[in-house]
Each structure stands twice: as C-alpha cells, then as structure tokens.
Image 1 (cartoon, rainbow, N blue to C red):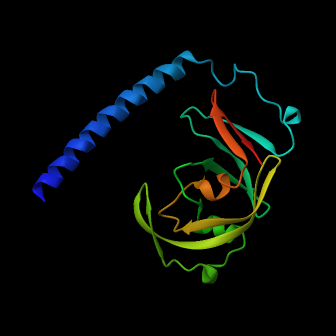
Image 2 (cartoon, rainbow, N blue to C red; image 1 turned 135 degrees about the vertical axis):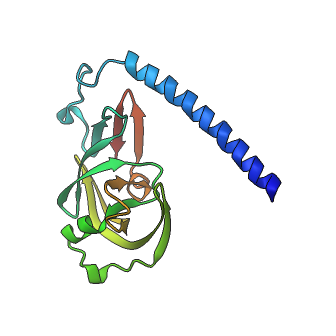
Length: 171
C-alpha cells in the first residue's frame, strides 16, 4: 500500500511537470500568434448551413451563446465533460421545476464529487446548428457556475475541429 502511494505521488509529480512544460509552450505559442482581433474573422454568411464557429477567448476557451430549449445561455465547450452540464438555476429558467429534478446521481467533477439530476434538453443550438434530445446533467448552483457544452452535444455533430484559435462545428 505504501509503495502504491509513493508511486502515485511520483507519477503525479511527473504529470505536473509535463503539464507545466506544455502550458509554457502553449503560452509562448499564443504570444507569437496574432490576436483574435487581428485575424480574419469567419463570417457566418460564408459558412455552409449547419456549420458554426466559436473563437477562443484570451484563456483559450471556446465560449459562445447557445440556445437551450430556445432560451439563450452563455456556455463553454468542454470536450472533457461527458454531457452538457447546467446548474439548477439555469434548469429552472429553461422550465425544469425543482420537483422534477432528482439529484440521485453521483458525479465526479473538476471541483470534486457532486450530486446531479439527468434531464433531456429538447434542443441545443449554436449558430445554425440544431441538435434535438440532448442528455444533460443538472448540478447544484454551488457545484457548477458555468454551463458546459459537453460530449452529449458534440458527439451528435458530424465534426468539430479546433484550429488557429477557432472551433468549427458541423452538423
């Protein structure tokens, strides 16, 4: 048991060092790239129907305005999230009553273990992309502050690709 603990600590240190090196390389690359405002922007009119592009923010995250069940919600694309994840307040705004949310599922998040309810969103939209019947997790407000657009949405697309600080999604 002690040996396993020591191995875990050693491997954690190696991973942390590798991540630090990767972050420094990524940060250096960002400093040498032109700012998003300097890059030619992709015009939605030039995109084919069923295609949408999100630009990376200063931290490299792909954020945008999504429509969940027809209501606008700011969200961040998260390929590490198995499902779309929203907090309880957002769920209520989308029409899910507190009584209809059954927080019986235990989930592991970046912030630790939490309880979640599973719902089905009638529709998730971004730009001209529309996906129906998307599974989502609802977490308590103190467990999730941001809406995450995870793999239950992304896996329903024909493709998505991050390139030159732009995320292009196609249905």
